[in-house]
Amino acid sequence: MDQNFWIALAAGTIAAAVTTGGIICIRRYEDWARRNAAYFASFAAGVLIAVSFLHIVPTSIRLDERAPAFLFIGYLSMHLFNRFLAAYVCDKPQTADYAIGLVPLFGIGLHSFVDGIVFAIGFNVSALTGVLVAIGLILHEFPEGVVTYTLLLRSGFTARRSFTLAFAAAAATTPVGTLVSYPFIRMIDEPVLGLLLAFSAGALIYVGATHLLPHAEEKPSRFSLLALVAGALVALGIVLTKG
Image 1 (cartoon, rainbow, N blue to C red):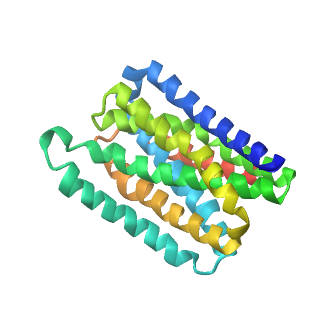
Image 2: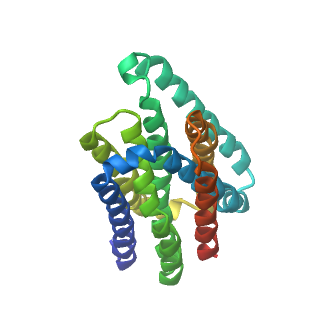
């Protein structure tokens, strides 16, 4: 493995550490997190929807004109996954709320894995490109960890299980994505990356618009709209940082 690989892996590990920091911080204030779960759901929806439409979708279309089809496939796949959970996993009273956490867990895990691939590609192009990519990606890792853990907690998982699942999906998948993809990095050209990004964007849009917002609106909270706007503004900051 060359030097670029180790730098990319280090960047992915830093991203995972930042996500883990978010999980640890919110775990220390678990009661507060439960009381404000609707705000976190609204904030997460704002981040995921805005980042997808403002950055991921345009980038994917620029890389491959077939991206809209994969955007739809990603969205539809998450819908089918949700239907599967409702029919076979969450069909009992004691597990009825699990989909609230499991659907975002899958969507965020998929996107974090793609983030790891992007790290590998960025540092393979040049050190400067890799650093610019890393800055943009790492900025959204902390709230991603907070949101993933909180939604798992809200869906009925124990604190220990929520921590383990959030770490595995939102944190560990990023360096794993870098590690797995780097040996094949020269085979992942721009069109393939564009299709991967489009698929992940479809998953994230489903998570935000179809999954998180309806659950947040089941129990309307006074400042949930402000939380949604705040999430969108954070996403806008991430997009502007990425340039």
